[in-house]
Image (cartoon, rainbow, N blue to C red; front, side, top):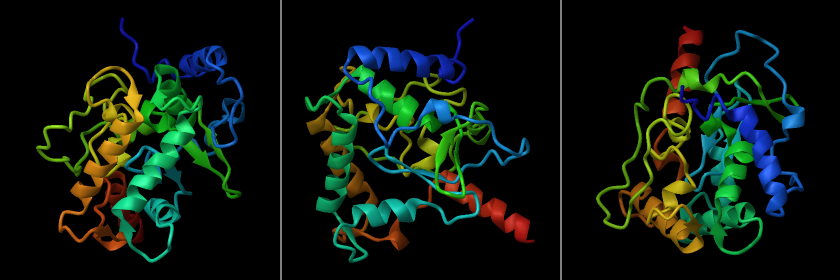
Length: 253
């Protein structure tokens, strides 16, 4: 019987640590989720919906269930001059900074080991895990993989980057969690694996030049009116943001 990556998640976390040691990745950076801190939700009836935004370059932003959707946290981080407008240079620079973070050996290429580290330590939501955010803002990986419930049906809204001949994201159903949706419910784009979406030539490696090229394509897609900048008001809502808003509206009725 074939096992999904969600089912193999805990084993993959351990294998990633072992493989990472051979790649010089044994030291766990401060920005990575530590499996040692993993704990199940305090409430067994916790909502399967997660207040998570995965930015266009793949960086996850999380907030407590009752907090505003964290797309605002990404926008403020990327908007370096704090003018309320995210221009193309700032957008691409945000992707470049995240690439540098993931490219732990600094060779300009994301290897399978570095991609695995990202999936299992940085954004395990794409494997179906839920990451809990405490009152103190500390995140921990829940051993109860609840997110797949929120991903059982296809995303209701997602942007297609268009007919650009250079855009060739990797879309392989059933290679991520059981739904095959991966990061898509938490993102502007229907890209289950944000890093591998930049493997434009299907080489199994993500080169920095392609990663930044995809960032440029993403900006053009989001800037559909050609204004030359993005604002929070003009950004689309992710499928998860819409579902959270519907749930909150239902609770208020």
